[in-house]
Image 1 (cartoon, rainbow over the protein chains, first blue to last red):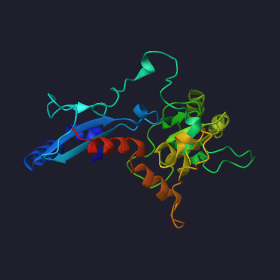
Image 2 (tube, chains in turn orange, blue):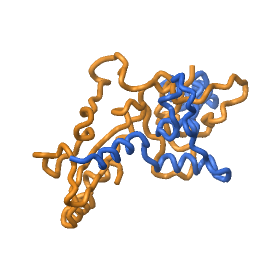
Image 3 (tube, helix red, strand yellow):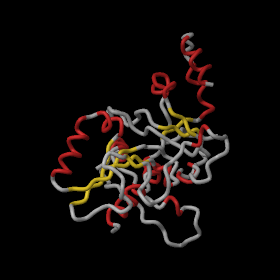
Image 4 (cartoon, rainbow over the protein chains, first blue to last red):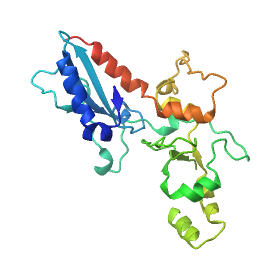
Length: 158
Length: 91
């Protein structure tokens, strides 16, 4: 199962789900992971819940109580630490966004995915703007998806 | 630059938005988002391997809006792969 953590953490649904799974004989592992831990320049922190039916069990869980929320996959790697505050050096472990971008077509025409003036006027100040050398992107979608040009990371090509 | 834009906009300048032109702002394309979500072999782009990563193919009749929506509701393939591998790992 995957979910937004802020939803899961505060809701009684999570506790109910966990206790129900336990009653049914499942062993569970809860995790909070970001693609950044896997070297991908996208934050997208998500809550994951894994469950296995007894007698199957999860490795590396000895001594850990059910309520722990792992910040890395047990036995694989470490917790992800936000390095932004530590130094201005780039994080070697995360790829640059440029690797993920389409090739730029030299053209005088507006870009196919250009942000319209109307959107800029209304939402310009709220955009999350990233550059090709960024190592992080976020918020690709917002709650209401009536318009495909909802607030997403923008790429600023220079 | 955004402060200038903000100021100009508050002052009611009709061309305030032109101040943002040098940034050449654009959205990510659906393909770029697919790469970020690891639906395509993005990490192999720079490798010299001849093995072309398998591309994700959209149905023909799907709109751009729907593409964004579907990607937004999806999961990161690489993260989920690691989770499934962990799930099937025995003690």
